[in-house]
Length: 302
Length: 216
Image 1 (cartoon, helix red, strand yellow):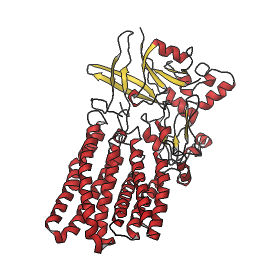
Image 2 (image 1 turned 120 degrees about the vertical axis):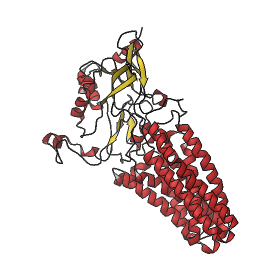
Image 3 (image 1 turned 135 degrees about the vertical axis):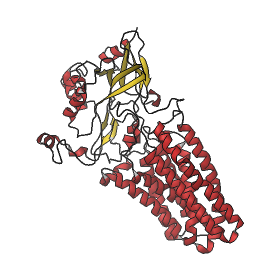
C-alpha cells in the first residue's frame, strides 16, 4: 500500500519558508518602525532594514521557481491568486518605503506600513489557499501567521533598536515591549487554536506529530522566556533595554521556528482515500472505506 | 453543454497498470512522472480485509484549486471542463502542486532519462523541453478529444476521440464521456451504480467518479 498515505511535500523548501520568515519579520518590523516615528524616533535605517528583509524573502522564493525569468507572469491573476496579490502589494510597499526613507516624511512611512500589513496578510492567505496541505488550509493558520509576523517584527525592533537608535532605545522599548507581550499572549492562544483545528482528523497524523514536536520548545523559548526577560527588565531597570532586546530575539526565533516547521515539516499532503471499497458480490453493500495516515475524528470546517 | 468526466469501476480494475503505461507512452512523460496512476489500497481489519486498485490522476475539478491559486493564469479551464496548463505562461512556482488535494501535478526541474544520463533515441525524439521547470499533469488527452470531434467522433465511444488510458484498459474499468448528456455512457453508468468522488468534503467538484456497487 505504498504511496497512498500523506507525504511531506518537497516542492516548497527552506527557500519558500525563508520568504514567509523574512516577509513576516520585515513587514512586522516596518510597522513598529513606523509607529516609532510617532514618538519622534526617525531615521532611514529601520525602514531600509525592514524592506531588505522583505526583498531577501522575495529573492529566496524567486530562486525556487522553475522559470525565474518569467517572474512578470506572476502579476497576471489578481482575481484569485494570493501570490499575485502579494506581488502587487509589494510594489507600493517598496515605493512608499524607499520614498519614506529618502525624504523622511512620516506620512510616507505610515502608508508603507499599511501596505506592509497587506503584504503580511497576503502571505497568511497564500498558505491558507493551498487546499492540498491540511496543515495550511485550516482557517486558523491565517491569524497565526499574521500575528507571528507582527510578533517577529516587535521582537526584531527591540533588538535592532540597540544599534539603530541607541540613544532612543529606551523610549522605543516601552511601547514595543507592551505590544510584544500582548502579541505573545495572542500568539499562544492562536497556536492552541491552530493545533486543535488539526488534531482529531483535521490533518494527517504525521503533520500533527511534527507540530507537537516543537510545541514545548516554541512555548518555552518563544513565549515564556521573553516574558521572564521582560519581567527581569522591570526589576533591573538599568538592564531593561538589553533584557528587552533579548526577549525580542527569542520571540523572533520562536516565530521563525514556527514558520519553518509549518512550511517544511508539517506540510504533509492530503493523501488518498476511499469512501467505500467495492462490492465483490452484487447487493453485498461493499466494504468500509479507508483513509491511510489519518486518525479518525470529526471532519474539520474548511 | 459538455463536461467530460472519467469513471473508474473499482469492481473491475485489476491493477495491471496498462493505463499508466499507455499514458506514459502517449504523453512521453519523464521517468518518475505519472499522470495516470493506479493505487493499491487496503481497507478493513483482519480478517475482513479487502484490496482495491484505484486509478487516480487529475480529476479535472469543476472548481479547480490549482487554477484558483495559479498566479500566472497558466492553468485554465476549458468550456468542456478540462483543466489545462499553458507551458509558456507557467513560472514553475509549484503553488498548484500544493493546492491540489489529489497529488495530480508534478514539476521536473532537470530532465532525467530511463537509461543513464543521456536520452535514448526515442526519448530524445519526444522530449518536450517546454515542460521542464513548469507544472504538468493529465490533460484528459484533450488534443485527442479535439481531433476526434473534428472528425465527428464521440469521445468515450470512439477510440480515436477517447483518452489513451481509457482505450487501453483491459478490464473495461475506465470510462469517459459527457456527464451533461443524460444519454451518454457515463450518465448511464452513474445512474445504474453507486458511486463516490474522492475527497468530496473538499468541494472541488471532481470530474472523476468511482463506481463501487450496482444500484438496486
